[in-house]
Image (cartoon, rainbow, N blue to C red; front, top):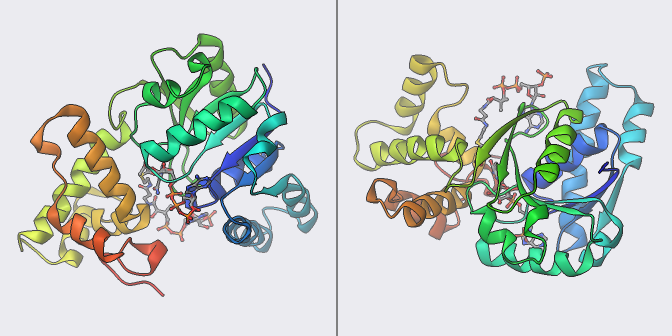
Length: 283
Ligand SMILES: CC(=O)CC(=O)SCCNC(=O)CCNC(=O)[C@H](O)C(C)(C)COP(=O)(O)OP(=O)(O)OC[C@H]1O[C@@H](n2cnc3c(N)ncnc32)[C@H](O)[C@@H]1OP(=O)(O)O
Ligand SMILES: NC(=O)C1=CN([C@@H]2O[C@H](COP(=O)(O)OP(=O)(O)OC[C@H]3O[C@@H](n4cnc5c(N)ncnc54)[C@H](OP(=O)(O)O)[C@@H]3O)[C@@H](O)[C@H]2O)C=CC1
């Protein structure tokens, strides 16, 4: 199956990045969110990113217009009626995701593949909300999407081989590197990354060092591009907490318990860069 037209659901930091790279690769993209202002915010971020490419003379103004013409705003899930692929990047919540997939199963054409950009939730469970579990797959992009090379591709229990192949081929057309993994909580990326971030939060919580010191140790000592607390703010503290809860519940092992300080920040609405405040403050 060849993918030509696709819908991205959720115009937040991940959805807008995914829509951008797909439009740049020449796909026709519908960018969907609940309200027009959310879609406009996502399209605004894409325009800003592309304008930077034009300023750096990596793209002409005409090429930018071509990319933008591949993008259409949508606030109606019924627009998925004539697409080949849907990439869902709504909030990291199983109830919301299964509801979306259940609706999409009714709306999308029979041949369409339903992919989720979930960070940690079981693909097999999301697939079970549909009558086409063989066409459901995980397509996990990394943040910031236009920059990061990896797409972790997750096979659910029932994912068909030809569906895996279509998604692997499509990922390569986005100039990304696909890596195949099986469906276990947090997959590979967040099973390893998120406990490190959670441990950094415990290190702060227990007063071992200041936030700046913790980040500096990991940046200068381990050559990480960002310290773990800066990275947590960048990912979103709500998303970090959801992922830790999925690991904790999925493995039933207390080594994955989320740090109380992470819970407190999320309850306060300090979600990181996207809300202007997390471990650090942002303009
Ligand atoms: C939670 C999950 O489920 C999975 C995840 O995604 S976990 C998060 C994975 N991501 C990471 O770990 C990111 C770690 N951080 C980094 O790699 C780097 O700090 C970074 C790429 C974000 C920024 O890099 P930097 O060198 O510090 O800054 P900067 O020089 O401003 O940016 C480097 C390039 O990235 C681009 N860039 C930075 N942020 C960007 C963004 N949000 N969107 C688009 N482009 C961006 C810049 O334009 C710049 O491009 P050029 O080199 O082409 O000019
Ligand atoms: N942040 C990261 O580093 C990464 C996140 N992910 C995953 O990507 C997904 C999105 O994360 P991220 O972009 O960071 O989150 P954001 O909060 O930035 O964006 C989520 C967007 O989805 C919208 N949304 C919520 N419910 C629905 C719905 N029912 N239909 C359509 N849109 C909806 C939200 O609207 P509203 O504002 O109203 O809530 C918001 O615009 C999550 O599953 C996350 O785990 C994957 C890789 C990396």
